[in-house]
Image (cartoon, rainbow, N blue to C red):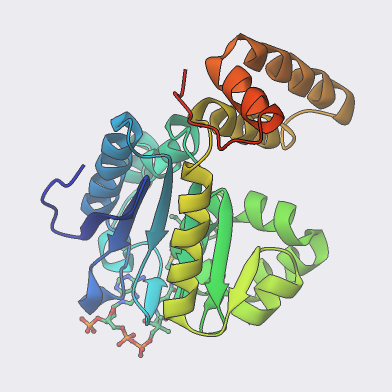
Length: 262
Ligand code: HXC
């Protein structure tokens, strides 16, 4: 999974963990179409790699990503944007990616950067993080899920205020409001924390992990009753896996399970 890229770097810093580092430092990791193509390709390669159980996306200490590339967008016409489904592919990762994704956010996460951070399954940040949806200041609105995911994460009144004013909020606030699962003191601790959590997830049965991600995500789309029924069906289906036998037999025998991911 280590293709050669211009705007990102990929690595496998821990067992079972794929890391994508956004790497367009001069533009504060502004998300251009070429960058997003590379990001999607890297995530697809990690998806296909059976040795990888969980993924992390991070940026630099200064910027996770300062938004969609404004210089790329500024001359687009309606036909360019609507007609060619501009940024539709940005959301692809939320459907094709079945392995858990942690976003580790330091520095600016603005506009499309904030939206990318929220596309992950778990968001970690440091106190250095600055989040916001400043699109209103550019005469537009969030376009890659910000109005939906921010509202789901922090509630309507706060999300509305942030999206209508373009005001930023801090990493500490992201933690207090439940957008971030953990807030770390420093960028290094944030990335370390994300990699450790990813490694922990990667140490479990990939089948169970995939099912767990699927059922939690379903809670966003289904009512409680249908969601609980869906969960029970998926739970039942895991009794057809070897990993269920391995996990429960290991517990009964006081041993460590050796997953086969089958
Ligand atoms: C293109 C960007 C950029 C962006 C920064 N740069 N953000 N280029 N698109 N989103 C470039 C700058 O032009 C500059 O290039 C270089 O990165 C460094 O940025 P500075 O502004 O000089 O840095 P600083 O003074 O530290 O200010 C940092 C900043 C500011 C506060 C983050 O850059 C900023 O406000 N950026 C725009 C944030 C924003 O509005 N994001 C939302 C975009 S709209 P040069 O060549 O001058 O060195 C969006 C739509 C999403 O994301 C909906 C669809 C996906």
